[in-house]
Amino acid sequence: MSFDLPLVWAGIIAFGIFMYVVMDGFDLGIGILFPFIREEENRDVMMNTVAPIWDGNETWLVLGGAGLFAAFPLAYSVVLTALYLPLILMLVALIFRGVAFEFRFKAKRSKHWWDKAFIGGSVLATFSQGVVLGAFIDGIPVEGRSFAGGPLDWLAPFPVFTGLALVVGYAMLGCGWLIMKTSGELQQRMFRLMTPLTLVLLATIAIVSLWTPLAHDAIAERWFTLPNLFYFLPVPLLVALTVFALVRAVIRHREIQPFVLTLALIFLAYTGLAISLWPNIVPPDISIWQAAAPPKSQSFTLVGVLTLVPVILAYTFYSYWVFRGKINVGEGYH
Image (cartoon, rainbow, N blue to C red; front, side, top):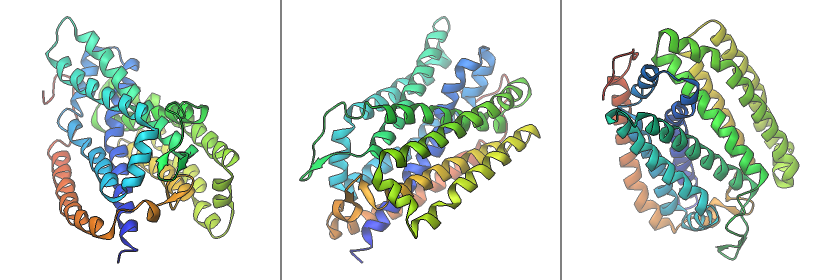
């Protein structure tokens, strides 16, 4: 049982991070899309689509961080030390964005400043998350049980590119969400934005997919050796099929499919990442078993998590169900 606990915890943390990317991704994407929409009433509609649920989406980020601390303390200490600056930037941006979200509805003459704060917080938080992801894939130097690199190791071409790629990905999620939740002129503008965003995201996925094995021999070996090749081969094929279905859904003006298919693209990218790095939790050398907490600690905290996660899922489902449906100009929850 002790051997299996790291696997269970790795699955829980991976699930929590994926849920955060999905649920806060479209939320942040709305802020990224703000510059494309100038009319105040349309911006009000955009924010009102997430007003009842936006703060609850970040629960999953807390779960992922707390789970990493409880189950893999070595990984927690190394990763946070290596990526301290971009993580701090992300948290500051999320806080500033949350303040802008609330103050914007109350402001009169200063409303445009809170719009800018909302845009800046959304873009910076997303970019910082992408930088963290890219630096994580690049690998973190460790000596003994401590981070052995410098404070700016993350400021490299590949992490910066993944930061920009994630901005595009979250913008797509936000666009799909608004297609599903709005109508009229705003929805039509989102339909027009969706296809170019899809093509840009496809290009970034292709570049990352080429850059990663070329820059990391260990990942290239993992991709192109058996039996891993059989696990990885369906991913690019499914990406191509998903993009085709997404563009077709946009052309046919389907309202729900663009968001669902964008989620599928994010999931496929996440799956490719898992295949590339498994079983390392601190690339390139520290596995989930090497970084794991003692079995008794993992067992104790697992009881709490298995109790908490169903509760989070239940109230998340309930809140989305209560506030289902479309939002029109002049309507909202604020």
